[in-house]
Image (cartoon, rainbow over the protein chains, first blue to last red):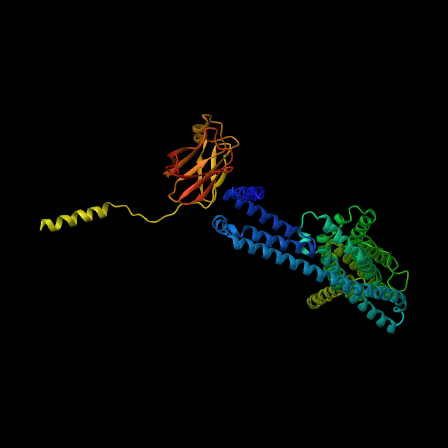
Length: 418
Length: 149
């Protein structure tokens, strides 16, 4: 009995000493401990990569609040500028905000799945349209009905491609929520998440298909400067999205060699679409304006080639004046100058060509001075005949006046003789 | 007549000489501050905007003017506005009063010959509690409560 009492006393003393030790903590240590744990929980909230991970933090917040509730008075006085309740509120607010982020990510992922099915449908449809357009392209030159059908198909394809582009941009956009884009370095968890989403939705493939279709569209259609402006806008939009996401995707795929190559392919396709495909379409559209009037110019794909093709055509026509019939030469001139150059090329395309640096003002002036030379050769001016006629008339008038003046003198001299 | 006027004159003279005083005032800091000493020997308390040179304090304690190097001081202010300063290995707690551009020593409270190992101040108005591991002492600006003054 005595022994039992001794053990109880010993346990009590141990408990008291433990209690005293816990009281041996200074106020400063309590406050510092609170501040450090607060920081740690804040960091846990920031670092949470899934809703499950985040839900663990709410338990930590509750435990933290309970642990320091007994020191509320000290903490209210010592924490500056916040107090105890405010500090706990801040943690709860940060938790709610992060929870909202994950809800947004969930919504975005659902959206991506819907987008994918729409993109797949549009990809298939665009392929069909491109094939039909290629078939109709040559038929439309001969058949007016086919031409209308061809133009409708192009409009349909343009709208369809535009719609699909927007979907793909949204898909790329939703692959990485803004909070992830702002991170200087992605965590392993972030990379895993992006990688699995990108793979599941075939985002890389879809971006490639989009770019290829846009290039194909430019190859099979003829556009006007306004269409080109719209395409440039579309390219800017794509460039902005890609600028924000592309480097992060490279980071995600850094250890997947094949995928890294695919990202490089996207970069080169985009560069080609931006630089070569649009310019190529402009020259093709201009060439077709000449072809519509049966003017066959030498092949050109840039400004220098265009100038030399036009100059060569004009010089050939000038040389053939007098060789072929006058009527034929005049018709060639009217078709080139009046029906093509001054009706379409100059008013529709020239501003765009100069503004986009594809031609200079001097190039334009040189071509137009060649056209003027062609006109002068074909329709020579007859000013010298009129001048000669005028001189003859003046000469005749002078002679008549001289003769008239001489006659009365002769009569007077005859009268004197008499 | 003079008997009536004289007390009035004396009273008004007293009134003119008395200093405007705002009472009560409480200067207590809720917790101590742990402040590192800079390479130049300066100590800065940002929350309460106090800065002072601690070189002389370390010299007074250790008779070594470079003893402040790499050290930090623990500081707290009591209700009455006295500053209590000590540091690890100090044998004393120094009590200062502020004056124009200076902290002036008010009292030097001896704690122990080997010096405090891990000191910490707690605000326990009207006292300042000095802790060193499990030992606790209540201090006032006059000395140790119930001990040497």
